[in-house]
Length: 188
Image 1: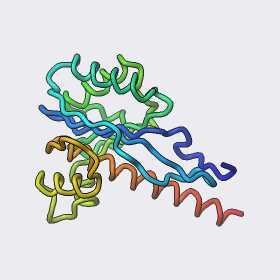
Image 2: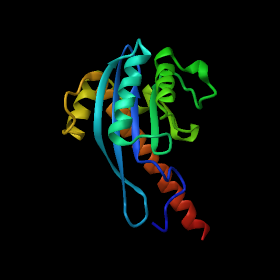
Image 3: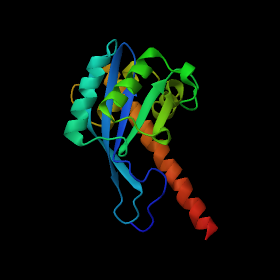
């Protein structure tokens, strides 16, 4: 791995969350090219739908994921949907109660990643990029998740949105690494 990009070098998992009254969660394992460490693909390894009005269910789900997959704050990239154009975590006013519960639960479990490994994903942006401008409905999101990731079991509308958020986040990470590598080649 002599050309390992400095951008997100330790990421092994992407946790995509669609927080709402009924929250969809999708955990993806990240695979890299063995020769250069570039992100290659993601595979969903766990999905869950939980009721988000209590902190305890979040904590239980994240604890189970931590035990099963060895999640920690160093190997996890968090993608969480927002309804505003909040650009960073300093814009706490852009976060709703559901998003804050996710952050609190991850912190309690010991899996809250560093700020540079948290992406606030605007709902309109990921839906337009993944589903297209004319197809940003729950029905299209469900069809997308089932077609692209057929191994995901019990896909609910909430899980389908989380899968879309995770896919969008992976595309963004791949594009940032490609940009980094192109810039590196030009500077040589």
